[in-house]
Length: 360
Image 1 (spheres, rainbow, N blue to C red):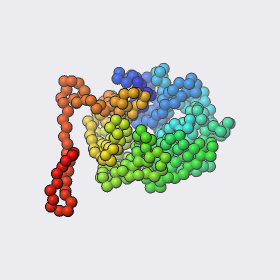
Image 2: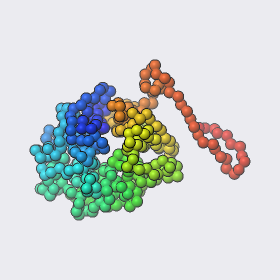
Image 3: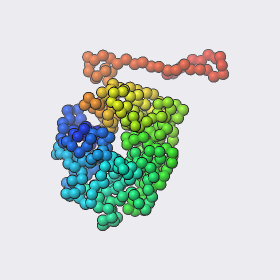
Image 4: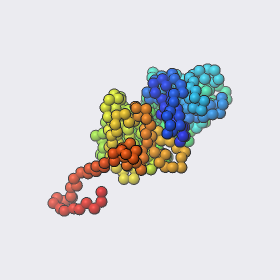
């Protein structure tokens, strides 16, 4: 699921693409091309008509979605008919960085990455003139190579692209066509999935790594552990083979959501919430149909409630958090929500001593 703006949304299921206005029913606009699992998408312009479209990959296929025209086409065919070169096949990751589309994570070459020609995602003619904007293949790149399986592509401002790998972090600094270089920034900490990261409003990167939740402030390349010693039993030993990990950031409550959905589709997940202001963790659970199977955070609205985290459910509904709702399904006649607060026993320091709880 991806949001084009506050009024339009695109959703992917098995071999189908849906789109529509937020708040109304979404309708199928195309079929074929994607399996529907692990779809990664970006919004960028099409050089053929100058319109913004959705460009999506999932490791099995690659498509271009024209939401305004309700059309879906195969990306490789568009390159063959109207572009240059051949689209790299089987990529499961995509990102926008410095005016180019980057692809990565081929099944048989998981450390490979590719850059399209600047401002043209239909041009994959490697080494073609003009070389200043030419496509680049990461294998054999003079500026260094990624030495680990790539799990996530993360544009970290306009100057850095982070390769979140299985057990390490690499960064591409600058443009590969203008002296850019790939270097390792963490040989031990990796990222557990394509959607296991999120940014806050200050540009701070949060991600679920191989040993818990981490953050990297904008401009820093030192992962700071957040969950160590606090909630290690839940997020310190996650298995990405059995969990679908998604993250979202709620700027209203200033919380980081780590959605941990069991991949079997029958088990309710226990999700983790990190409260930034309090530096504290809590857990949450949703009904199985709520999932979430996909997460997005729209932008572009002046109403902060419209910029809450949105959840795509397996029942076909898209939901978001709402600070004002006091009933279980938002209707006036529904049962009022109950609130239960649990807190641990507090042990006084120094042995036998009386203490009073003044604030909770």
